Length: 294
Image (cartoon, rainbow, N blue to C red):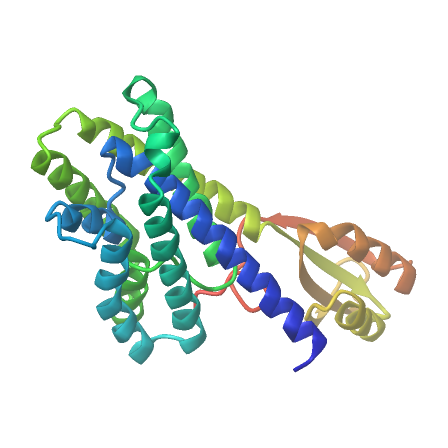
Protein backbone atom coordinates (compact mmCIF):
# COMPACT_ATOMS: atom_id res chain seq x y z
CA UNK A 1 0.00 0.00 0.00
CA UNK A 2 1.33 3.45 -0.96
CA UNK A 3 2.33 5.83 1.80
CA UNK A 4 -0.22 8.41 0.61
CA UNK A 5 -3.02 5.82 0.86
CA UNK A 6 -1.96 4.93 4.39
CA UNK A 7 -2.05 8.61 5.36
CA UNK A 8 -5.54 9.01 3.87
CA UNK A 9 -6.77 5.89 5.72
CA UNK A 10 -5.30 7.18 9.00
CA UNK A 11 -6.86 10.60 8.47
CA UNK A 12 -10.27 9.05 7.73
CA UNK A 13 -10.01 6.82 10.80
CA UNK A 14 -9.21 9.83 13.01
CA UNK A 15 -12.13 11.78 11.54
CA UNK A 16 -14.50 8.88 12.23
CA UNK A 17 -13.15 8.63 15.78
CA UNK A 18 -13.64 12.35 16.45
CA UNK A 19 -17.08 12.26 14.83
CA UNK A 20 -18.23 9.32 16.94
CA UNK A 21 -17.00 10.97 20.15
CA UNK A 22 -18.78 14.23 19.28
CA UNK A 23 -22.02 12.38 18.55
CA UNK A 24 -21.84 10.26 21.71
CA UNK A 25 -21.05 13.19 23.97
CA UNK A 26 -23.88 15.22 22.48
CA UNK A 27 -26.36 12.41 23.04
CA UNK A 28 -25.27 10.87 26.35
CA UNK A 29 -24.12 14.00 28.20
CA UNK A 30 -26.55 16.60 26.87
CA UNK A 31 -29.69 15.23 25.21
CA UNK A 32 -30.58 11.85 26.72
CA UNK A 33 -30.14 12.85 30.42
CA UNK A 34 -32.51 15.77 29.81
CA UNK A 35 -35.04 13.70 27.83
CA UNK A 36 -34.37 15.68 24.64
CA UNK A 37 -34.99 13.89 21.38
CA UNK A 38 -33.32 14.79 18.08
CA UNK A 39 -35.42 12.59 15.81
CA UNK A 40 -34.09 10.16 13.21
CA UNK A 41 -32.89 6.68 14.11
CA UNK A 42 -31.31 8.04 17.29
CA UNK A 43 -34.70 9.39 18.31
CA UNK A 44 -36.23 5.99 17.56
CA UNK A 45 -33.51 4.36 19.68
CA UNK A 46 -34.55 6.61 22.58
CA UNK A 47 -38.16 5.49 22.14
CA UNK A 48 -37.18 1.79 22.04
CA UNK A 49 -35.06 2.33 25.13
CA UNK A 50 -38.24 3.21 27.04
CA UNK A 51 -38.94 -0.55 27.01
CA UNK A 52 -36.26 -0.77 29.73
CA UNK A 53 -34.83 -4.08 28.51
CA UNK A 54 -31.97 -5.41 30.60
CA UNK A 55 -28.49 -4.85 29.16
CA UNK A 56 -29.89 -2.80 26.26
CA UNK A 57 -29.50 0.99 26.28
CA UNK A 58 -29.85 3.68 23.62
CA UNK A 59 -26.41 3.08 22.08
CA UNK A 60 -27.09 -0.62 21.48
CA UNK A 61 -30.58 0.12 20.17
CA UNK A 62 -29.02 2.55 17.70
CA UNK A 63 -26.76 -0.18 16.32
CA UNK A 64 -29.57 -2.75 16.14
CA UNK A 65 -32.10 -0.60 14.28
CA UNK A 66 -29.42 0.50 11.79
CA UNK A 67 -28.62 -3.07 10.73
CA UNK A 68 -31.55 -3.47 8.25
CA UNK A 69 -30.77 -0.07 6.68
CA UNK A 70 -27.09 -0.99 6.32
CA UNK A 71 -27.94 -4.31 4.65
CA UNK A 72 -30.16 -2.56 2.10
CA UNK A 73 -27.54 0.14 1.59
CA UNK A 74 -24.84 -2.48 0.95
CA UNK A 75 -26.95 -3.87 -1.91
CA UNK A 76 -27.74 -0.57 -3.62
CA UNK A 77 -25.08 1.97 -2.58
CA UNK A 78 -21.32 2.37 -2.78
CA UNK A 79 -19.60 -0.29 -0.65
CA UNK A 80 -16.96 2.07 0.76
CA UNK A 81 -19.69 4.46 1.87
CA UNK A 82 -21.52 1.63 3.63
CA UNK A 83 -18.35 0.35 5.32
CA UNK A 84 -17.46 3.81 6.64
CA UNK A 85 -21.02 4.30 7.83
CA UNK A 86 -21.08 0.88 9.53
CA UNK A 87 -17.79 1.60 11.27
CA UNK A 88 -19.10 4.97 12.43
CA UNK A 89 -22.36 3.50 13.79
CA UNK A 90 -20.47 0.84 15.76
CA UNK A 91 -18.12 3.49 17.18
CA UNK A 92 -21.03 5.75 18.13
CA UNK A 93 -22.93 2.90 19.76
CA UNK A 94 -19.81 1.77 21.61
CA UNK A 95 -18.95 5.22 22.95
CA UNK A 96 -22.58 5.83 23.97
CA UNK A 97 -22.57 2.54 25.89
CA UNK A 98 -19.27 3.49 27.53
CA UNK A 99 -20.45 6.95 28.60
CA UNK A 100 -23.76 5.49 29.81
CA UNK A 101 -22.09 2.63 31.69
CA UNK A 102 -19.64 4.91 33.49
CA UNK A 103 -22.54 7.22 34.43
CA UNK A 104 -20.67 10.32 33.28
CA UNK A 105 -23.90 12.32 32.94
CA UNK A 106 -24.74 12.14 36.64
CA UNK A 107 -21.13 12.80 37.65
CA UNK A 108 -21.15 15.99 35.56
CA UNK A 109 -24.45 17.22 36.98
CA UNK A 110 -26.85 16.17 34.25
CA UNK A 111 -29.76 16.57 33.91
CA UNK A 112 -29.66 20.33 34.21
CA UNK A 113 -33.12 21.76 33.57
CA UNK A 114 -32.04 25.24 34.63
CA UNK A 115 -29.95 25.51 31.45
CA UNK A 116 -32.13 23.35 29.22
CA UNK A 117 -32.07 25.77 26.25
CA UNK A 118 -28.27 25.90 26.17
CA UNK A 119 -28.11 22.13 26.55
CA UNK A 120 -30.55 21.63 23.67
CA UNK A 121 -28.49 23.86 21.36
CA UNK A 122 -25.15 22.38 22.43
CA UNK A 123 -26.36 18.80 22.06
CA UNK A 124 -27.78 19.44 18.59
CA UNK A 125 -24.59 21.20 17.50
CA UNK A 126 -22.36 18.33 18.69
CA UNK A 127 -24.42 15.78 16.74
CA UNK A 128 -24.28 18.06 13.67
CA UNK A 129 -20.49 18.33 13.93
CA UNK A 130 -20.34 14.54 13.95
CA UNK A 131 -22.54 14.27 10.85
CA UNK A 132 -20.56 16.93 8.97
CA UNK A 133 -17.21 15.30 9.77
CA UNK A 134 -18.49 11.95 8.53
CA UNK A 135 -19.98 13.48 5.37
CA UNK A 136 -16.61 15.06 4.61
CA UNK A 137 -15.09 11.60 4.01
CA UNK A 138 -18.09 10.20 2.12
CA UNK A 139 -19.70 8.40 5.04
CA UNK A 140 -22.69 9.06 7.28
CA UNK A 141 -23.95 8.54 10.80
CA UNK A 142 -26.51 6.09 9.44
CA UNK A 143 -30.25 6.03 9.99
CA UNK A 144 -32.29 8.55 8.04
CA UNK A 145 -29.20 9.65 6.08
CA UNK A 146 -29.10 6.20 4.47
CA UNK A 147 -32.84 6.15 3.83
CA UNK A 148 -32.69 9.62 2.29
CA UNK A 149 -29.93 8.62 -0.13
CA UNK A 150 -31.74 5.40 -1.07
CA UNK A 151 -35.03 7.19 -1.77
CA UNK A 152 -33.31 9.95 -3.71
CA UNK A 153 -31.35 7.43 -5.77
CA UNK A 154 -34.39 5.33 -6.67
CA UNK A 155 -37.13 7.94 -7.09
CA UNK A 156 -35.08 11.09 -7.89
CA UNK A 157 -37.07 13.09 -5.32
CA UNK A 158 -35.53 16.50 -4.70
CA UNK A 159 -37.40 17.23 -1.45
CA UNK A 160 -36.32 14.15 0.54
CA UNK A 161 -34.74 16.31 3.24
CA UNK A 162 -38.08 18.01 3.92
CA UNK A 163 -39.83 14.66 4.28
CA UNK A 164 -37.14 13.45 6.69
CA UNK A 165 -37.45 16.66 8.71
CA UNK A 166 -41.20 16.11 9.09
CA UNK A 167 -40.53 12.52 10.24
CA UNK A 168 -37.96 13.85 12.74
CA UNK A 169 -40.57 16.21 14.20
CA UNK A 170 -43.08 13.35 14.47
CA UNK A 171 -40.51 11.24 16.35
CA UNK A 172 -39.69 14.16 18.66
CA UNK A 173 -43.35 14.78 19.48
CA UNK A 174 -44.06 11.07 19.95
CA UNK A 175 -41.18 10.62 22.40
CA UNK A 176 -42.19 13.66 24.45
CA UNK A 177 -45.80 12.51 24.64
CA UNK A 178 -44.81 8.97 25.67
CA UNK A 179 -42.70 10.20 28.58
CA UNK A 180 -45.45 12.66 29.51
CA UNK A 181 -43.33 15.81 29.15
CA UNK A 182 -45.18 17.98 26.64
CA UNK A 183 -43.07 21.03 27.47
CA UNK A 184 -39.98 19.18 26.23
CA UNK A 185 -41.38 19.18 22.69
CA UNK A 186 -40.29 22.81 22.32
CA UNK A 187 -36.77 22.13 23.60
CA UNK A 188 -36.39 19.00 21.46
CA UNK A 189 -37.40 21.00 18.38
CA UNK A 190 -34.82 23.60 19.47
CA UNK A 191 -32.28 20.76 19.41
CA UNK A 192 -33.41 19.76 15.93
CA UNK A 193 -33.14 23.35 14.67
CA UNK A 194 -29.68 23.75 16.21
CA UNK A 195 -28.65 20.51 14.49
CA UNK A 196 -29.88 21.70 11.07
CA UNK A 197 -28.23 25.13 11.36
CA UNK A 198 -24.91 23.74 12.61
CA UNK A 199 -24.89 21.04 9.93
CA UNK A 200 -25.49 23.58 7.16
CA UNK A 201 -22.72 25.80 8.53
CA UNK A 202 -20.27 22.89 8.81
CA UNK A 203 -21.00 21.48 5.36
CA UNK A 204 -20.47 24.85 3.74
CA UNK A 205 -17.15 25.06 5.55
CA UNK A 206 -16.04 21.68 4.24
CA UNK A 207 -17.16 22.44 0.68
CA UNK A 208 -15.87 26.00 0.46
CA UNK A 209 -13.80 26.26 -2.71
CA UNK A 210 -12.43 28.66 -5.32
CA UNK A 211 -12.87 28.31 -9.08
CA UNK A 212 -10.17 29.74 -11.37
CA UNK A 213 -10.73 30.49 -15.04
CA UNK A 214 -7.45 31.11 -16.83
CA UNK A 215 -7.12 32.44 -20.39
CA UNK A 216 -3.58 31.91 -21.61
CA UNK A 217 -1.24 30.87 -24.43
CA UNK A 218 0.42 28.44 -22.00
CA UNK A 219 -2.59 26.34 -21.01
CA UNK A 220 -0.80 23.02 -21.41
CA UNK A 221 1.86 24.14 -18.93
CA UNK A 222 -0.80 25.42 -16.53
CA UNK A 223 -2.75 22.15 -16.66
CA UNK A 224 0.42 20.16 -15.96
CA UNK A 225 1.41 22.42 -13.06
CA UNK A 226 -2.06 22.23 -11.51
CA UNK A 227 -2.00 18.45 -11.69
CA UNK A 228 1.52 17.95 -10.35
CA UNK A 229 1.75 20.72 -7.76
CA UNK A 230 -1.86 21.10 -6.56
CA UNK A 231 -2.97 17.52 -7.19
CA UNK A 232 -6.11 18.85 -8.89
CA UNK A 233 -7.73 18.14 -12.21
CA UNK A 234 -8.84 20.83 -14.63
CA UNK A 235 -10.88 21.37 -17.79
CA UNK A 236 -9.54 23.03 -20.94
CA UNK A 237 -11.53 24.38 -23.89
CA UNK A 238 -11.16 26.87 -26.72
CA UNK A 239 -12.81 30.30 -26.73
CA UNK A 240 -12.82 33.37 -28.99
CA UNK A 241 -12.36 36.87 -27.60
CA UNK A 242 -15.10 39.23 -28.81
CA UNK A 243 -12.72 42.20 -28.78
CA UNK A 244 -9.56 40.72 -30.29
CA UNK A 245 -11.35 38.01 -32.32
CA UNK A 246 -8.44 35.74 -31.40
CA UNK A 247 -8.88 32.13 -30.43
CA UNK A 248 -7.56 31.33 -26.96
CA UNK A 249 -7.53 28.33 -24.68
CA UNK A 250 -9.24 28.50 -21.29
CA UNK A 251 -8.44 26.37 -18.25
CA UNK A 252 -11.03 25.93 -15.50
CA UNK A 253 -9.90 24.52 -12.15
CA UNK A 254 -11.60 24.23 -8.74
CA UNK A 255 -9.39 24.11 -5.63
CA UNK A 256 -10.05 24.16 -1.92
CA UNK A 257 -9.90 27.60 -0.33
CA UNK A 258 -6.65 26.78 1.46
CA UNK A 259 -5.02 26.12 -1.94
CA UNK A 260 -6.15 29.42 -3.49
CA UNK A 261 -3.01 31.43 -2.66
CA UNK A 262 -0.77 28.63 -3.93
CA UNK A 263 -2.85 28.42 -7.13
CA UNK A 264 -2.48 32.15 -7.76
CA UNK A 265 1.29 32.01 -7.32
CA UNK A 266 1.52 28.98 -9.59
CA UNK A 267 -0.47 30.67 -12.39
CA UNK A 268 1.61 33.83 -12.05
CA UNK A 269 4.83 31.83 -12.27
CA UNK A 270 3.85 29.55 -15.18
CA UNK A 271 1.97 32.14 -17.26
CA UNK A 272 2.56 35.71 -16.03
CA UNK A 273 0.70 37.21 -19.02
CA UNK A 274 -2.45 35.16 -18.54
CA UNK A 275 -5.87 36.67 -17.87
CA UNK A 276 -7.24 35.03 -14.74
CA UNK A 277 -10.25 35.52 -12.51
CA UNK A 278 -11.53 33.56 -9.53
CA UNK A 279 -14.97 32.92 -8.07
CA UNK A 280 -15.89 31.75 -4.57
CA UNK A 281 -18.01 28.59 -4.67
CA UNK A 282 -20.39 27.69 -1.88
CA UNK A 283 -20.54 23.96 -2.58
CA UNK A 284 -18.67 21.45 -4.72
CA UNK A 285 -19.99 17.96 -5.32
CA UNK A 286 -17.60 15.53 -6.96
CA UNK A 287 -14.37 13.61 -6.67
CA UNK A 288 -11.89 15.27 -4.33
CA UNK A 289 -14.62 17.30 -2.65
CA UNK A 290 -18.02 16.18 -1.37
CA UNK A 291 -19.31 13.13 -3.18
CA UNK A 292 -22.98 12.16 -3.14
CA UNK A 293 -22.91 9.89 -6.16
CA UNK A 294 -23.49 6.72 -4.21
